[in-house]
Length: 589
Image (tube, rainbow, N blue to C red; front, side, top):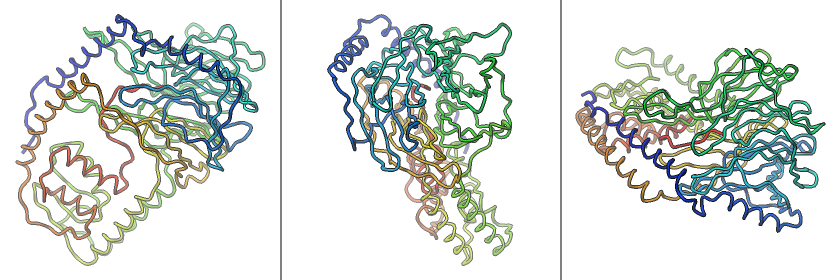
């Protein structure tokens, strides 16, 4: 049977209620008396007093690893290419936000951390920018968030760290950019180039597209203003800025605009345009998309290796039925050839080798068994599941099963012979090889750098169901070999505190409506599923579970349980290239 007609306007009504609640929260932020937890000025003053107590520089050798965080900065030490410098970042545990101002130095060869504590250090921040040049690390801007995320403080301070002595110095020079976070800063020869970002005024969020230059020889700021009629990138934050030879490239980003509807609500815009800036004339020009560019996404990371720029991760929001948004966290790698301006997906040699093995097994089976009129392509399963997302997952799973199975209206046909069993055993061996492929999970706001020929990815954030998972793992990839990812530091268990009672009441209301939909979905599934004879799962394990789910044998699974089991099978078969999770409010910095 087909889908039942859902109650009209139900999703729209839920969206309107959430929008109204967000507006109420915004009004409270603007009008209510500031609580001690919200008083950012008092918090920063307290931190400043604690900093004043420091009298000398202290370096803790073999320090514990940094806590999970996103929106931190990670730089290669120009004085030592095997050392990385990590500063700042933020962590949200479900009820409170923690912003960090600690400085770590990580030795890649030794695998140990050093925690550096210095007098006159910058106050804690996230979504700032850091650039290393000669024996100095320069930091500009960023933000401090109150523990309950009600208020923000944006910085416009400019700091310099001496990498030889670990001593900080604040640089106060006229003409600097206004307070902001989510901007980008890169090094071009002896100049720091700053572009874009945003500033939250509580009443509205302002996005910037201004361009500033700081000369490291003269220590002077200069604003580059557009000439009338010239091309110029629109205001945005969370984009990527990188340098190649005599050009500076800008790609992507995120911004919001006020929609033209009656409610004047804000609408998020994910940018996917690319620009190139000529530092000799400070003229912008658009770059045409060539090759196979990545789809629009927010929160991705980019860096340059030789004549190629590498893109990793990001998130894509997809609208599902009932005005529900789903977020897809990506772990794809893309390359952009800077000399010819062409995009292409980067595939690792080990992954490609595994795919080739599976294709070879498929070809061998086709030669041995020959074509069959009674079965479909062994890499395809046709199913009439009521959930389109579930259809997609089952199809993905089936594309890696070397099994002649046809699912149609409850009828399951399994072609059984010795040769098929042998090829299935080979395929299962290949699938277990897929499980061994090490790969970072999908994420946003991760830190990414290149040292020598190695790409490093640290931390970031992803979501699982209604939880934000902040990461502290470190992965490495040799960009010359492109053979396999190496996990240098595995992720630790992320802390999560349950939401407050008010949030739970809202969640309960949502769950009630979800339960109603689930009951409708279950009744649909009951109508669709017919009792069939038990078919022995010849290969057992993952393959047997997949067949059981598709034909509906054994225990009747609720829609959520079925969804969870399919995700497990996807992971077991090495198909979980990304995480499908509900959308939470996230910042793209």
